[in-house]
Image 1: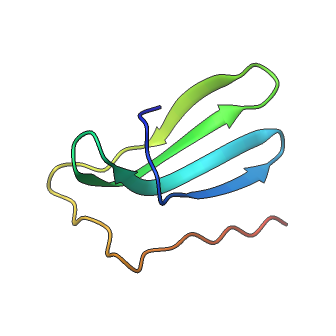
Image 2: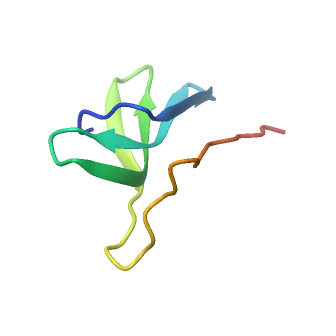
Length: 67
């Protein structure tokens, strides 16, 4: 996973999910979702925005509900 800050994180079923953030190295806002398997310590890209997608707004946030 690239170095990001200002992102959202949640943990569910042994995985940590990271959404969005800012990548200082590229001066770029992110609209991606990554997961980290907390047992195996393996990152996976869950979702990646396409160049045609709109960048997230500065007020973007993350909410997750498990049931």
